[in-house]
Length: 275
Ligand code: G3H
Ligand code: ZN
Image 1 (cartoon, helix red, strand yellow):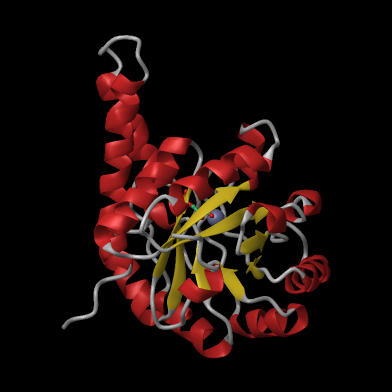
Image 2: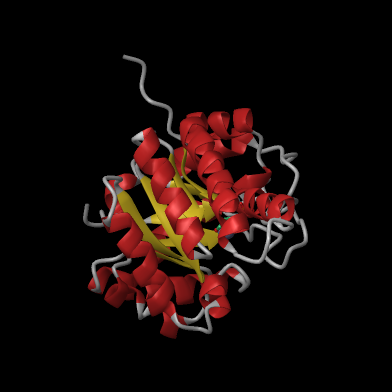
């Protein structure tokens, strides 16, 4: 079916999972799991993934879109962790329903100014804009779970920028390969009460299943997951590398392993309501 808009999938009080796409196999695995579990999903492509593909957004966006539109799953397309405004401005031409503008490396005033400009641009182009306040560490691979977003500052930031969703720092960290992150669940509830837009959890691969369930229960809405798929992918590739030179011999099990991981996480994050 045609892509859906991110805004349709992100509803306060419900969890929706957003998975990072790096290769065609990631897109196929995510969409297959969404179809099989009957859950909607967000496929997100990061600025770093675009760099991996030679700086060109078109090919990986078109491939992801074609996989989604060839399925019965409800899939939205999101451009993730963008710091390059030129790249952000290409999103509207490639089927994206949303963008995360990441000004978190800047000080508060600079982050407000840049995010407000991104927000105005997104509104003009019918896109939903996510921003980040309180840098979620680990974007360069190292863990830095100590940072926290202040609820009062978060409310002021949303009012000053007009963003549609806010990524907050509550104890998770990017690129964790062990699921040992402890979230500050009281802080999530205080942020939910203070901030009038959906909250986004980054670095969710390092968060245990029960903690993810509790985070959604406390008001986290969009749950971003990347590394968990790469752990599944790379583990399966390693286990199948001696099966000859045809890449399908290890890419097929890698894609299956990602599909199983996505299906599991969809059940955790977006449980089917009791009948
Ligand atoms: O924006 C993407 C996510 O925050 C992914 O983080 O790779 O640690 O799961 P992760
Ligand atoms: Zn992130």
